[in-house]
Length: 268
Ligand code: ATP
Ligand code: ATP
Ligand code: MG
Ligand code: MG
Ligand code: MG
Ligand code: MG
Image 1 (cartoon, protein in one colour):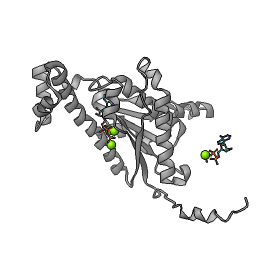
Image 2 (cartoon, helix red, strand yellow):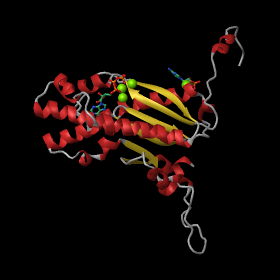
Image 3 (cartoon, protein in one colour):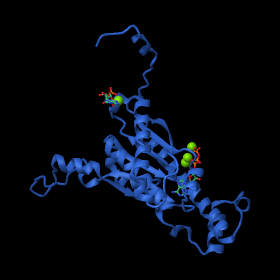
Image 4 (cartoon, helix red, strand yellow):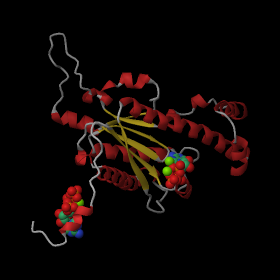
């Protein structure tokens, strides 16, 4: 390509590679979803359609970027974990982040009618995004634990808050005042004594959020051998491709070590 005299301005662009060997986490979060969920008549505290749509958009992102090993979502946020050795876009931070967040937002919009059939989308939703690098497996699993703990704390609070508003007729301000300074144990007790709700019986989707992982059956590095050492579980390229495209959606605990022991291939 012939160079123009304007070409020098490219030098003003800065390269922003992610440090090698670090897990790359992209977290996206809905902009002003407090208002967005009200404007779209979300059920409170948890609208299943909204959560389903978030996971659908996240799966679309995982299908596009095969280097994502796991995604975790709750409320209006999703975190995507890219493998520490991935080379996507030469690990350019802004390139990865903007591609993920724009694909997420366009998927959220495109699949909206599937989840909200009669509720029309009132205005285009936006999402913010950030890139965070984690140098060790422990930092990464602690990051995910942090997001799941946040899900739990918010959900416990929101469950109490909306019960007081919807069933006891408190105003939002009164409900907030009633909950100010309470501990988790107080909130559990409030739900049990005043609403006969055992918090542990609330759906795991709400309490734990959503964990998207690749299909283990076809994706695990270890193939079980039969007794005559014949590899019976070797999959064709197309089968592997299909497995990479399909995700498992779990609503399980990822704070305890057990999850990582049961799915060692995720971080391998
Ligand atoms: P910001 O732009 O700073 O992120 P925000 O209004 O989006 O502002 P968040 O802290 O991200 O603030 O909170 C998300 C809001 O969206 C919360 O009020 C939460 O209850 C609501 N929300 C998200 N998903 C759902 C859902 N599936 N059902 C009901 N409410 C939801
Ligand atoms: P990348 O993901 O690297 O940006 P790309 O395929 O988008 O890959 P670009 O260099 O951005 O590559 O080029 C954009 C392409 O889209 C060009 O092939 C251009 O001709 C085509 N294109 C964009 N807008 C139009 C348009 N309005 N009409 C016809 N072609 C268009
Ligand atoms: Mg935010
Ligand atoms: Mg938000
Ligand atoms: Mg949020
Ligand atoms: Mg382009």
